[in-house]
Image (cartoon, rainbow, N blue to C red; front, side, top):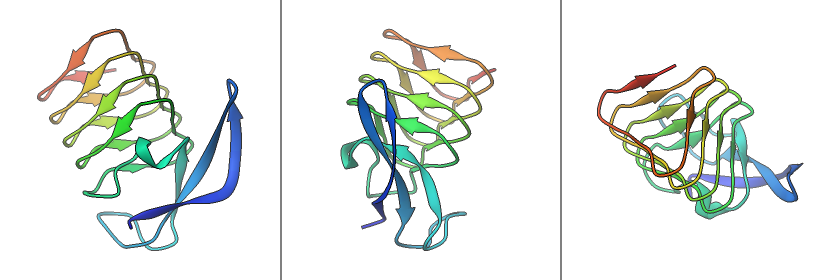
Length: 125
């Protein structure tokens, strides 16, 4: 196991999200580092280097996997997927059936939703 859900939780739109804590060292994450918030383990893969950090939130059926990161105050929810080496950061929102993959970067106040695809080396700010 790469991380565990802690007892620290927040309520968001009727859902309970739990802060995560690293159980191993990987990339810039060390054992014991606290991450962001997820609703359930299905939101963040236990494999690869995927991570949710800062005050970022991942909920619903959304998934973060591969080497993807969600950080800052970003939200990923609904059926959204963040994969490969993609980064969603700052105040960005990714939701619906949206996909962010490859080396894509979504940051600032960017919104990615519906059936949108952000792929390759695309940068949205």
